Length: 293
Image (cartoon, rainbow, N blue to C red; front, side, top):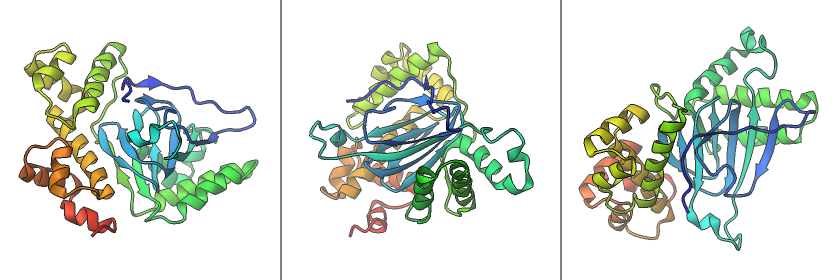
């Protein structure tokens, strides 16, 4: 089941006794849509995998991924279909922290000692990913935020952000030129395009059909999509397919040649070229680096 991808402004609740919120999410449906909020979001995935959209960036997410999403940056975590089974046999679990950039006061980030955190939050306006496999202390720092009380919660958050800022493994997600457009009229159209593509990307997508969804002729559609997202529709579709191929590679249930076609490609050479261009690796190397031979 795919949901609409209209960026929706969310109000993040917190109690009067706390300056920022920490919660455990175990429901694959929660915030399962394209949304944004003024608060910065720090999320770690413990269980569950799927496709993540951060600004104009698309990739797979998996357990151990830690993502920092800046204020008003649209994002969307779409769990794979297997996690929506009613029997709960495939649980999901994430820890999510929301805080305002100035909850500690307007002058705090101007201090010389907090310069790394200020720069981190500036980078987070594009979204930042780090893996617990590379930063093994990060999950423990996040757990400390949950268990701490009083001023200790704020200190724990500062320690976590300081460690995040010091990591040499940060991956910026959205492109530097991405600028979200929250116009209601345009969001409805982009929503329809994303929704259609998510439902059809594993098959041949005809430009005339997706353009009709947007109520545009093909040439106008191509110009429109590039102007709104900063990438061509072909790039968007290819990234979505390569992300799906990465999932199938890690599942390791079918051959690489077969998963090429399962991901929506009809030419193995084209698939191989696009996979290496987007991931920087061949499919075989991608598997080996994830312990699959």
